[in-house]
Amino acid sequence: MSLRTVAIVGRPNVGKSTLFNRILGRRVAIVAERPGVTRDRQLAEAEWSGRRFLLVDTGGLVEGPEDRIDHEVRQQAETAIAHADVVVLVVDGRDGVQPVDRHVGELLRRSSLPIVLAVNKLDELGDALDHVDFYELGLGDPIPLAALSGKGSGDLLDRVVAALPESEDAEGSAADLRVAVIGRPNVGKSSFVNRLVGEDRVIVHEEAGTTRDAIDTELDIGDHRVCLIDTAGLRRQARITDDLEFLGRVRAASAIDRADICLLLVDAAAGAANQDFRIGHQAWDAGKGLVFVANKWDLIEDRGPEALAGFERELRERAHYLRWVPLITCSALTGKRVRKAVEFALAVQERRAQRIPTAEVNRVLQELVARRQPPQGGRGDVRLLYGSQVASGPPLFVLWSNRPHDLKEHYVRYLVAGFREAWGFEGSPIRVKLRKRSERA
Image (tube, rainbow, N blue to C red; front, side, top):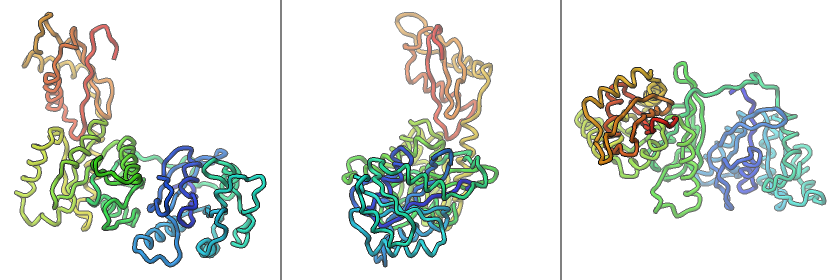
């Protein structure tokens, strides 16, 4: 990316994610009172004194990690450092200098990057001298800070901005399409994203629910810049007993809201579960484009074409909305058709962005009414007068009637089906608003 990058690093539970949220002015990274909450790199755009930059939150660095997942957290943090222009090392001023702080400090000194040392959790900055002990790290003047309350954050950001090199492109870049990769835990979402990006962008682990935050990654597909949002796996509410699991679910729901298109990944080998359909319906109700992606197809493709036909038939029967959703099979393990899934998303976005001329809307509407009249109420004839498409992405049609409240829901569904027959809109919900003739859209 053309924007300069600032990476926040340090050992676990020193307040890195709290500082990340403080700088952004909103809760983006999950924060909880336990070590090891942040595992993946979390990116967001920040601004201070007119300078825009990418801010990266990282998992806690530990010395000589023994667990595999701790080792991968360290790799993720080191990757963030390798791609950073400035590094903010966060330490805990109440704990004093710890062996891991010395180890990380030595690692950073070897990087030759500009380093800003933030001594966090010093709530009484005026009289605090606890930060002076950290001079021994050899990283310049330590900045006392209380990330939770914001004290000292302005001084820290002044130092960060002063250390940033000039941006190569002040305008940065913007994605043409935002695609959220959603689904239950452990269906291969992170492997899918990593296969697309071509690097270990998010941690992949056999432990279900490894990804807790929504992670953004940009890549080019043809002439399009696509922002991929990998999300924490969505579980049923009754199974969310851990506060972090709940927050991860909230982040996943937020990722759906931020997205244009959702790729709903399911485990084809295990079969679609009711929760898969609920997750897809959540995106559909939110007005998002949707592509159904059957991952791990390499495990069952030897069953022949009848396996795909049966799988698709079952999906359409179990969830009505999936009649309008494209289906693609892929394997994140082998990479087969993974890129094609994003191409499907681009096609869905193109279809849901189309605008139908008002004359064409009314021509189709008149044909549908002539074929099947609206059910009549006891208070007189119910008539559809005219219609117009007033928005796209998703398409929204306003239909004016003399008695809109007497139009039954099943008749509106009939009209929507007629619109799909005429114009497609595959992969996108169609919304209809009914208005009395005197009302505005």
